[in-house]
Each structure stands twice: as C-alpha cells, then as structure tokens.
Image 1 (spheres, helix red, strand yellow):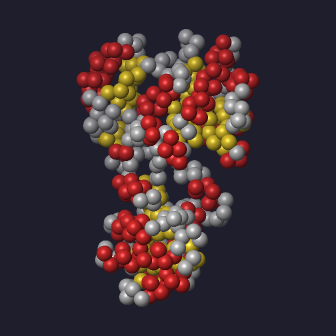
Image 2 (cartoon, rainbow, N blue to C red):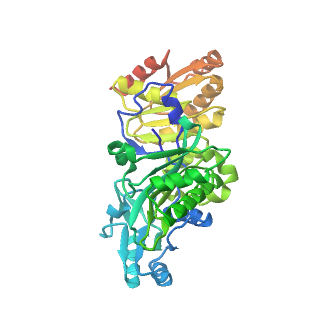
Length: 426
C-alpha cells in the first residue's frame, strides 16, 4: 500500500499484522509535495522531455490571450487542481467537465470564465469540491496510440524500476489485474543508470517501432534524468503516446518527490500549492507531527506509524472509532506534545483522547510533562487515557499521578483502548 508519500506505513505493515484502517474512512489523506499538472510539465520540459506547448492563466482574459498565442489547430483547456477525474467533474457554476477541447480560441475565454473561481467536484475531491484558481491552455495533439510508462522506487529491487505497458491511457491497475503479461519491468542499476539497450527494449515492449522506438528510448532516458535531478520517488506518464506526425509525447504526468530531499530541492518545493492542503495537517507539519484525520471520535496520540495503526485497530476491536492518526515520531519535545493536544482538542468530533507511547528514543517523562502542561493550559474537557511504557516510565507515571489532573492511567494497550471506549459510553 502507498499513501501518497507516507511510505513509512509500508515499513510498518511488514512489522504489525494490523487491518490498516479497514474499519474507517479517510477524510483527509496525507499529502506531501504534490504539484499541479502544469508544474510537472514545466519540470519535464526543462529536462528535454517532449510535452505539449502550453500556457497558464489565472483569469479568463489571460486564458483567451494564451489560446490566441498558441495558434494551434485545436486547444485543450484544463482546470488545475490536485485531484484526478477532472474530465468527468462538475463545477458549481453548472459547467460539466474540467477538461475541454475546442478549435475556436474565442470559446476558451468563456469556458475559463466558468472554471476560474468556481469549485470543481470529482470522484477524488471532497464533497464540496475544490476551487479552481488556475487553468492550463495547451495545444491539443492527436494521439494515434497510447502507452503507459513510469519510473518508481521499488523496495523489493532496492532502487528504481521502469514499468511500462502498451496499454496506456487507462487505469494501469486494471491492466495489471486483467492482462499481467502486458506489464513490463526493467530494474535500473542505480550506479549505471538506464542503459541504451534497456531503454530500447522497453520502447519495443511498449510497441514503438523503427524511428519511433529510438525516439521513445531517448525520452525514457530523459525521464530518468529528471527522476534523478528532482529526487523523485515516482515519475508516471499516462499516456506516453505517439502522434500521427511521428512524435513521441508525454501527454500527462504525475511526479512524486522524496520529502527528505527538500533541503536540496528548494526550487521544486517552493512550487507547492498549499491552498488545497488540509489546515490541520499543515499546522501539524509545522511541529514535525504527522496527522491524518479519520471519521471517529477517539483521538489517537502515539509515537510511530505502526503503533498508531495498532492503536486504531484495538480501539475498533473494542467498539470505538479513531478520530485521527497523530504520530509524534522520535526526538519529541514538550512543546510538540502541547501543540499536538491543541490540534486534537480543536477537533469537535473528539470525545476522548488516548495517548499510547512506547518510549525507546522517546523519554516518557518529557511526554508526561507535555501532557500536564497541555491539560492545564488548554483546560482539557474530554476524558484522557494514558498508557506509557519504556524509557523513564516510572518518573513519567509519578509526574502524571502527582499532577492532580483527571488522567486515567492504563496498564497496557488493550486496557487503554477499553477505558477510552468506556469513557465515551460506547
């Protein structure tokens, strides 16, 4: 499983045999750096990858001017939001579809006027949709054949892998399920990079022939150069197509980035559009907290992704519903504990808080001090159940017991979950 950048869940799944949130729905999936389509295409363009000619507009008049400047036989207008299914989406202006084709540049202004400033709802957006602030005006190219190509990090191969299929322009998971023989893989040696014979072999497997095979292989190598240059964890092109004029073009792209590489990819991370991010997640990230909102009423405050999932599962086992996934991580400070409680208590759904800390590199006494400070200063009004184990746990338990605060201590995780569920009368 891959939750859009939260790869630490994968590591935890190997350790903890949990149900991985089978019992609840995701309200706001965790998103790391996620670029708009036009931003990804600009990065590709800068690396010599063939993409359609395009302009970006923030107003209807800019969109109209861009359409005229393109001077193309046909134009495609695309709403720019961080969600899939735009073509079948609906605007609250009444316009149907976030992607439109036209041969008349004058129509672009009218369409953009019904997109910009309005919410677009797709199968991947919240129910109320997402406000469109930018549109991409691009040259529409005919596609004579569509293929799929991606480069991604594969833990089982200890490095990057090329994945391709001659069946592009559709859900690649469906292709893998129904026609696995049409999925081709090439493991890349991280020290040698993509070799000419690998690129040509992949191009042939994708169905490119003659001069198009050479052209496709060149594009594959350029995509790998981009993959390395921007510290990507995935570069996915769907469709990776050919035109009737004999061009190989990357028509649509999705790039995922290594969040840990932000320090050397400042220009790329500066493009991050935070307007679509969940405000609670953004606030949590400021304090190095990892937060995912769920639809229950018992807040989970833990250290470690695997422990978080186990905590959520045991709450569910006893008939409760977790309200969130909040991971402190290691090296925690008292202020982080305080800020975590601020986030949890600000959620109106939260009727109880369960703290489950296993102190290895985390000092339980620091957690206890942070908890008591938060309870006093925030005037905590919901039941609080705390289970601590590990480093300096005896001192931590002393701090909590002498605080005089209405904190319910738990002996183990099972006991903690029972008490948290009981506290809200479930």
